[in-house]
Length: 77
Image (tube, rainbow, N blue to C red; front, side, top):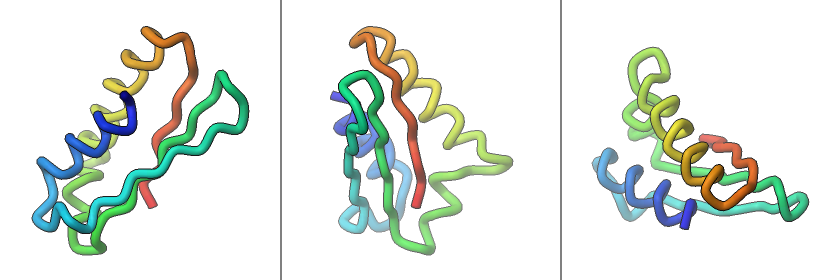
């Protein structure tokens, strides 16, 4: 569910939605790392001014993670 959320938000923001790649990595069942990769020219759009867009995405992920009882981290590559 969280992977789809990140993918939906990222594809809505960027100019090249086909270049969006989202991968999940579970180091243990309670900790999930979501890696977001976008085209180089769209990286600024995903991060936003002073990181506000990235921070908003992380906040939404935290809310979704609390519902599932896990911890989640978002890495923008």
